Amino acid sequence: MLQLSGIKKSFGKIAVLHGVDLDVRAGEVHALLGENGAGKSTLMKILCGILQPSEGEIRLNGETRRFADYNQAIDSGIGVVFQEFSLVPYLNAVENMFLAREMKNAFGLTKRAAMRKRAGEIIAQLGIDIPLNVPVRSLSVAEQQFVEIAKALALEARVLVLDEPTATLTPAEVEHLFKVMRSLRAQGVAIIFISHHLEEIFEICDRITVLRDGELVGSCEVKDVDQARLVEMMVGRRIESSFPAKPAIAANAPVVLDVEEVQIAKGKPVSSFTLRSGEILGFAGLVGSGRTETALSMLGAYPGGRCKLKLNGVETRFADPSEALAQGIGLLPESRKDEGLITSFSILQNVSLNNYGKYLFGHFFINQRKELEDTQTAMKQVRVKAPGAHVRVDTLSGGNQQKVVIARWINHQMKVLIFDEPTHGIDVGAKTEIYQLMREFTAKGYSIIMISSELPEVIGMSDRVCVFKSGGIVATVEGDAITSEEIMTHATTGRTRHVA
Image 1 (cartoon, rainbow, N blue to C red):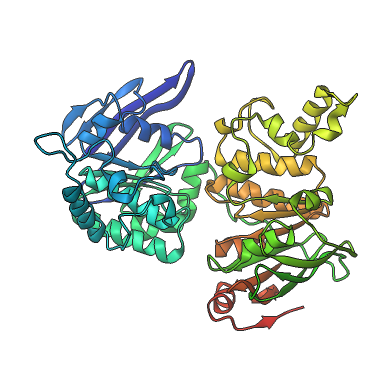
Image 2 (image 1 turned 180 degrees about the vertical axis):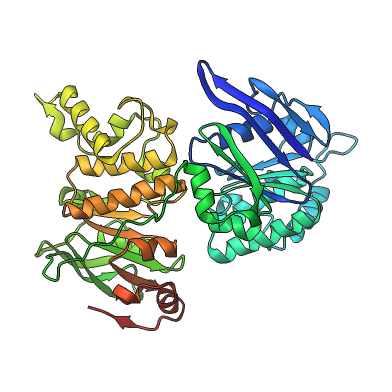
């Protein structure tokens, strides 16, 4: 159905695609894999007319095509659901689905009833129940994701590109998305699926194409490869284990953080936990179980929360996160782009953020030389890959953006780091680097709270795990008890078993 042959793309003298081939058949789910920066997004932007290739050919249903813009691609039956939603938040689902392509009558008037009827048919086809008359900003992330897919189907897309569609979905929502994808596949729709979750590839995809550094590594049937082989194709080397070895935590390791009471809201459970020097303490549980809210309540950032804690043996209470920052606790938020970084700023500006006081002299001037030296030191320590400290953060891959957030807290000399979904949206190679950095930090005496929705990550990285349900901690497990079965039993049943 779709063939991309010899696609090349250069920006000035920099070549980013080197003659890539991709063919996608009608009625298949085709995975497009590669690390951040491998060329996946550039290739998809060329497919949908956002970018023009320097060389190469696009053939759709045997016909050579060249799309001048995205509208031409849409008219030809190509729909893209981008990782960053393109919905207008103040419009409802129907208005978004037919935006700029409204149904009109002979007098040029919008046929609202016909649009609503068609929207209802598409939503029903997807097997979901979404209110059509409310602004999409009031919908859940999962509902917005399905509106994006419905929008593509409303435009009668026969080639559907899904870019990281599961990144913000719960396991149940992911399973429903896969059910929808299987239904579309049965109707002959060709689906290009981009994901960093390799287990999803084996569950839903038929074939795979892998890119590395702008070049085609190869294409294969899913049944002919395993996860280790895919990782090797993506990163150019075998990764025997993504997770570093867990060092033994000394029995007499000092307690850095002793949270005697924490409650995320009135009427919710009151929890307690401790964090020791050199330890990674995992926060696990289903979405909505209160993991992130507990951490934010501890920092004085969650409305309605309360907390009683000791930091290095001293009773402390934080009125807001700035007080926690001043006492050595740094937060890497789940949404690094919205809450952790100013992406239009440089690496240097982001690393110095919240800490300009240490570079001031004479009340009005900044010691730019010292600022640059400290930023370069922090970049080197966390291995940020960038041409220099003055590069804008929005030009970096997801993994390197995450490292910039870490570099800021290293520059601030934090000793307790809270990582909320530390590897969300980054590729397998970058994940391994983040895991290695975390262990390097704990070896130097840092203490880490890691909040994660990925069970393998929780199991592979945590020295102990606090399991959450209904807004509080229902169990703390360690050692051989850190298993998926044990964690999920607590997370789903709330059966309490606290290990000191």
